[in-house]
Image (tube, rainbow, N blue to C red):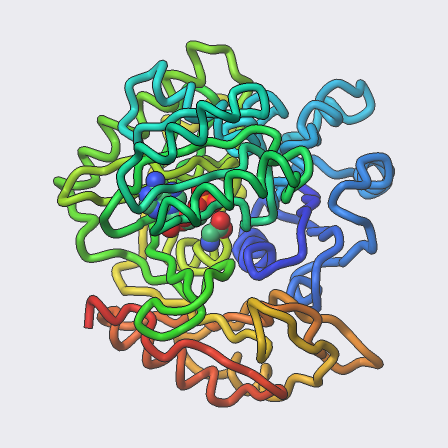
Length: 427
Ligand code: AMP
Ligand code: GLY
């Protein structure tokens, strides 16, 4: 079959790499893709939110499956757009309906959902301009640190962890009164701070059945030892040593199963990936957030670790046979290390030529996935903050990380930076 993949990051490069291995896959088209995805298919210069242009391309290229990488088109209703149109209703769209995507698109929606289904999460309250004064009082009486979240999508910047009441009150005002994130902060969720270790769990569901397809630990801070500003993710490891059978059984029973049951009971149309952002609080899992897509860079470790054919898995989610699929993992350990532009996550320069990608790709046990890259006169240049990632496998996490760093040392671009301590707690 022909597949249309939507997105242009390292996640999409990993998805294209994995899907291209399937005997069920004929051609892959990527909108808009990057030089890395172009190795596995045809990039189409179409924006991820240009639904009409995507529809035209889907018809022209006889697409039978659409895999949506990022959350924005999902929250904007790409599933419904294709599903409601007789010309495209036959296409297997991997991604939830707009209503179900509110699990990521609205923090308040997801908190209500968790409350309705008794899914463990931080205690919370929500405020708008209408109960602003109550919000101020709530914050002032709340234990520290305190977490403030803009309700809507805010490009990963809508969460503030305040260590003083003054900081929290200022953020609260900025979000609600100054409309810091536009309509996304018309409502603010205020949450208890959960202390623990974060881990991401990924499932594929058809709205009734589900399969766990992997898990990973993401390193979000720019600096070594988890210091400095938050980023989109600087590296990941999988499997995570504390995700043993006993902990996974709790995650399944207390979180994944009730979530999928809740989706089914509420009649939410959901065929796609569920990303459970969890906190392991002294052995007990809590949900920090749901995302309605795969993570980036989590995808870059979970897909190389997954042995099962991905296209067959996605087809099974469409034809009601997900329950019969056997999920298999490679026995080795995987790590991905992200190389970023100097200055990221603050301001940075672009368009620097990148050398050494081909050399790194030739190393055993390592894969290069491109993220913020582009072509400039047949040369691959930097186009974003997170530029590329190397995923390596080894007999343990330490060896996997070492191999990824070695492969990265063959790659150069001006200002290139990567963390050398990914997986440090497990060394
Ligand atoms: P989110 O945008 O919901 O992923 O939040 C961004 C990050 O903020 C998460 O990955 C966590 O590291 C942190 N975070 C969010 N909510 C909480 C919480 N209730 N307690 C502790 N950390 C949190
Ligand atoms: N790496 C976190 C995310 O994709 O949201």
